[in-house]
Length: 145
Image 1 (cartoon, rainbow, N blue to C red):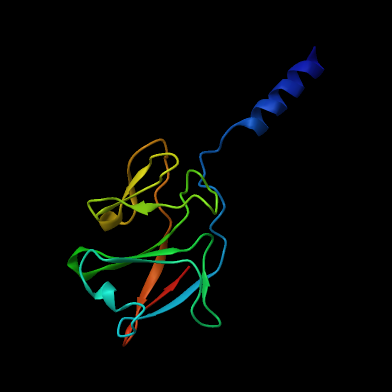
Image 2: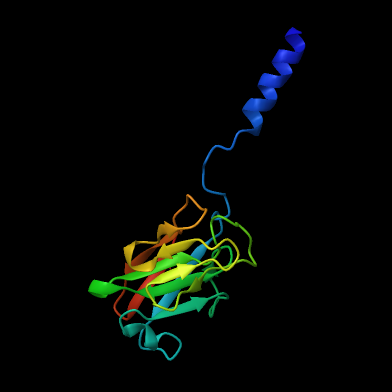
């Protein structure tokens, strides 16, 4: 009986969901965004966005599934992991909602506010979007993790 109780306890401990965000974000991120280049010049407009799934230059890395670049209010640039944190799969990525202010996962239906740092708005997820560091440069910005 003690052995049964011990095995049940061990199983319960190891099968519990810790509630931690899935570890799909240990991938390198290093992207140089030159706002004067034709690839990125549209990002100068407020509430514009660009999805980058492959690097343009050697030494650049685009995270797990890619990077969503977003030009938010108050002239703040954001960079988010493109993979839905709830689904945690490379082929299930967030999409910009019709209002241009939110992103939505087409699989689980989770909605995230792009202008509020990727905060979860609705849906089954308890995770926010992973936000990457945006560092200003003389011609634009660099995205890193």
